[in-house]
Image (cartoon, rainbow, N blue to C red; front, side, top):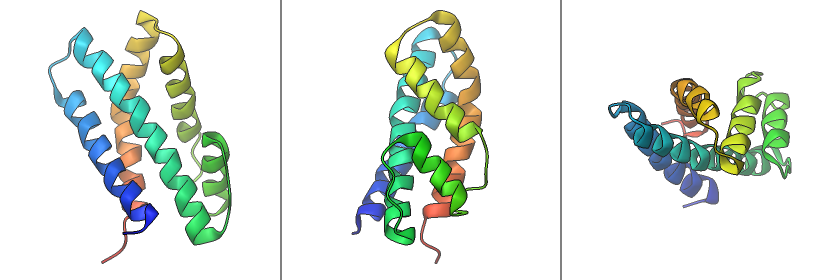
Length: 127
């Protein structure tokens, strides 16, 4: 199994866990759990993009936003600022806790999960 294949499998499992939290009845605990799951899922997403860029395009990037921007340049991902917003959301939630921020981020997580599901389709080997 290649590095990219292994990362994809871990990413898919993390995304499933995020979707599991999003499907649960809403409560403060579920919201906080979903945000935590989002944080590690977006981390896995950008690292998967990083590996794909290196293996498929020979492009090296080191930081999340840099990798997403490079993915746009290589036409791996369609240009969309939301990927960069997801990185900002992750940085905000992982370094501070504010109730209003948590509520705002939680509302955006279903869209985040949709984007990440699209990434799976892009990266997954075609049968």
